[in-house]
Amino acid sequence: MAIHPFPIGIPAEVTLNDVRSRAKVLLKSIEAGAASELERIEPYFDDPSSLTLQQTQLVIAREYGFSSWRKLKAFLEVRDELHAFQRQEARDLMSVDPGGVGGKTGRLTRQLAAEMGRECEQDGGRCSFCFSSQYKVAKLIVGTGYYICGDCVELCLNLINEGSARPAADGDDDLRCSFCSKLTTQIVNLVSATGARICNECLELCVEIISEGPGSNGDNPRPPASSSEVIGMMNPGVKRVIGILAIAVVVLGFLLMVWGGSAV
Ligand SMILES: [Zn+2]
Ligand SMILES: [Zn+2]
Image 1 (tube, rainbow, N blue to C red):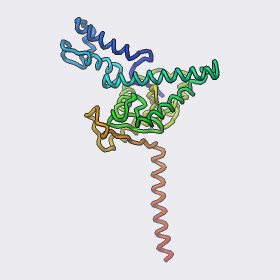
Image 2 (image 1 turned 90 degrees about the horizontal axis):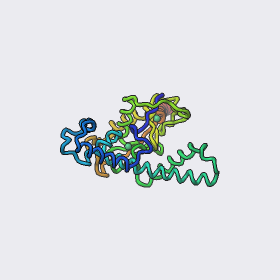
Image 3 (image 1 turned 60 degrees about the vertical axis):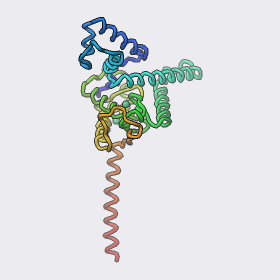
Image 4 (image 1 turned 45 degrees about the vertical axis):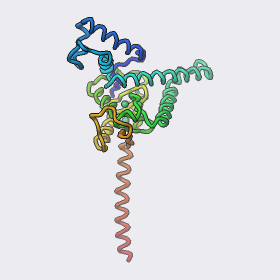
């Protein structure tokens, strides 16, 4: 079992102001001709002499594993909001049960997840990984209370393929995939984000769902709201049960037909 932190290396202490100033510093260093910083630009832009702040912002976003600056910004804004909510919850618990918060981390996480689920209901669905709204993504796959967008499915698969797993820590055995509820002891790879976790099997199922679904528009990163698609994710187990039931109904129908025919 391997656990992959999501997204690539964005430490909890890095704030929106930090990434903003990093983009400015990078632009200034390039303008000053710092050769070491040119290497960071090269994979994305050919001509460093005409670089803009938007472009260095994109470089910073890509370095953290996001496809655009807009996504990095949205991620940090929602993450900070959630952290503020979590801190408030911790304060509330402290006032009820002083000193009891340490053992309640699991409960806090569940409350946070429930809260996120409610937010999703309110604004029509939000990816539990990058926090993009359903209106900003081409595809959004819905699990039980959790969501994942097409871009994050791709990002998660890349994380697994790159093998960027962190060493297992105490308590990892209790982690579950948010989509199929399997424990880490039952799965090979788990991508773990602030808002949700997803296993390799569910990711494969998502890829299947996305490739089967109509209206795939992979070239268009910002589709209009009308073209975004929210797809329900069916647990493979449920799918199998439905398949067996369908066969049972056909067989029963056939038997009834035969029985009906012989009774006449
Ligand atoms: Zn996403
Ligand atoms: Zn799963």
